[in-house]
Length: 299
Image (cartoon, rainbow, N blue to C red):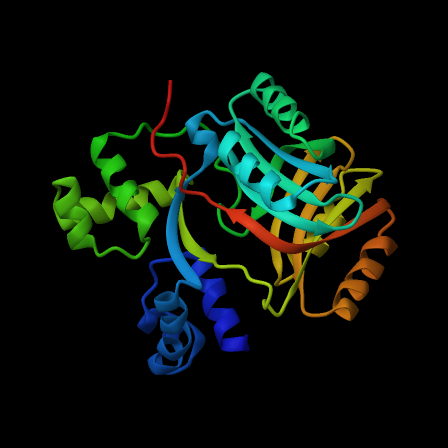
């Protein structure tokens, strides 16, 4: 992936509805240069632009990372987890654990039920979890919204439903579907995004041929870790970062161009006085990544 493509995708993460012309203006390149890179990715399904509503808005206040040690059939376990629990992310990993699962649930009681379900699967020998105390950065959903959120009405729901399928759906089609004017639809989309309720951005189709190496990094801290957060935040490949409760104080997912790139970052990280311990694992194969499963808000 060249620098123009990377920069265009970075802009789409801030606003997935940016046109090719707007992307070209921002990057100072011809529109054709953007179209030649992004259009094939969209047409092939390698890249999708979709909308998601932040899980906390749906009352899914407990977001957890679960690391599994398994000895059974990986494909079967992945399929069972995908069918039986509200998983939004499943990855095969290289390290002490063989699978990482992320789930969003309403309460600690629901999380406990999810853990019992997973631990009861044949072939799962251990499941260790972390709870996200506060999401600082996410490849797709962004930072957590602050404060109370506005209520959604039927028109908002209709707009979100279409944008979950295609985040670049034309305003005219959204207006027809929601029975509103184009101006009203545009205003609602902007309100949902600015309030942090909805995010529209790119979701890549991960594959074994992906050029970058995606690592999970768990950090134990002696302090607030602000310098560690600042270091990770400067990384172009940062996909996710959260302060956590459990065996780590901070969890990050970062893409690196090479092992040399990873080692240089780890050297910097370990030199920070607040860093007490660093644990890493490689995301060898992303098996599930979904953010559109939340279709309605439940009371």
